[in-house]
Amino acid sequence: MTCRSLLLSAECGKPQRGDNGVERLACTREGTGKVESWTVQLLTILGVAVGAAGSFFSARLLERSKWQREEAHRWDEQRLKSYVQFTTSIKDLISLSKRISAGLGLPGSAQRLDTTAGLPLLATAVDDLTSKIEGVLMLGSPDVIKAARDWRHAAWHLEWFARGLRNNAEEYLQAKVDSDEARRCFYSAVRADLGIVSGAMPDIDGPPPWR
View 1 (cartoon, rainbow, N blue to C red):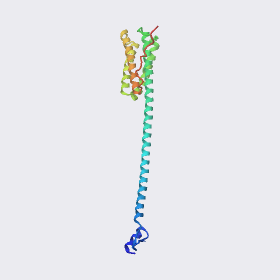
View 2: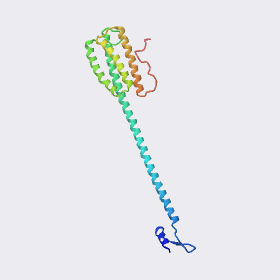
View 3: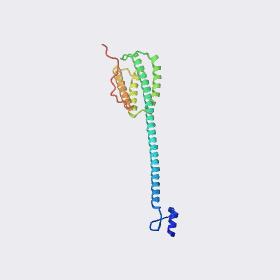
View 4: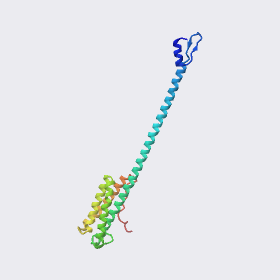
């Protein structure tokens, strides 16, 4: 056995003798098989790692999407709550203004309320509205905030009549029309902000005509 054969046999295994009497090494096929085996194992490990990473990131994306939907739903609920509170408060103020104005002789079908009993209630209603509009300012969309401001201005005009600051009957009737229009605009802005797409809101003003 030559020195070269001994060196190769140390690397590849025991030497073998060929038909021609020359020692040869049966390591070529074995070495190639080992390389292929390691390649398959490496590719398998890489495949598992890529699959695990893909699953992890997919799960994270799904969790984030779910969290975003839950947050959007939560804020929608908060906005709706603030809109309803503002609406209830400003309608109470407008109702009181109309009743006091009716007691002062201005035209309308509201139940009359004298100023002695009505003005303290009106002051309380103003304070409540000042508190409730803050929720709209903090959570509302720009269109809703603008509509709320316009409705508040219209309610102010009616309040001036209730306080005796104005007494023209035609102006009072126009103030009532302006208040109703401002309310419709506010409702439309709220419906758009909350994504309600069922159609335009029908007219709901006043009692039905007498038949």
